[in-house]
Image 1: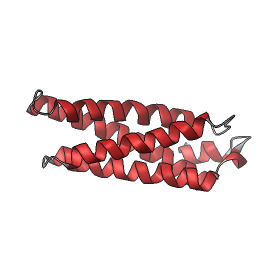
Image 2 (image 1 turned 90 degrees about the vertical axis):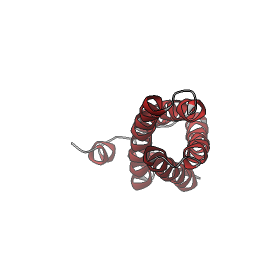
Image 3 (image 1 turned 180 degrees about the vertical axis):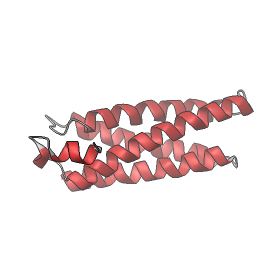
Image 4 (image 1 turned 120 degrees about the vertical axis):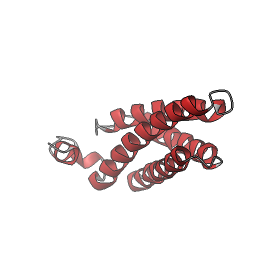
Length: 129
């Protein structure tokens, strides 16, 4: 069953714009996997020369994974969810800058996934306000 169907069946589905929520969850998951793959590729390529990129990718992957998991429970209480989504957008922006500064295909693809996730997180926050 696709996640959009699960979200649409949630008793508190009215707490979010479901299309934006779905987009953000998918973008976070895609970004998390892209960052993990990029870090692994960089490790195989040049661990010491790519240390900043590897570290940033690993941090971004962790933040995106946590954000996707929290967003999969669409019944927010308080504003901590929004702070997490904002932090995810910020982490993605930082990772996109770092990866975007390298010519490797993995880095360029990772930067694109990070920019998409950043935008999806920002649009979810805008839709929720």
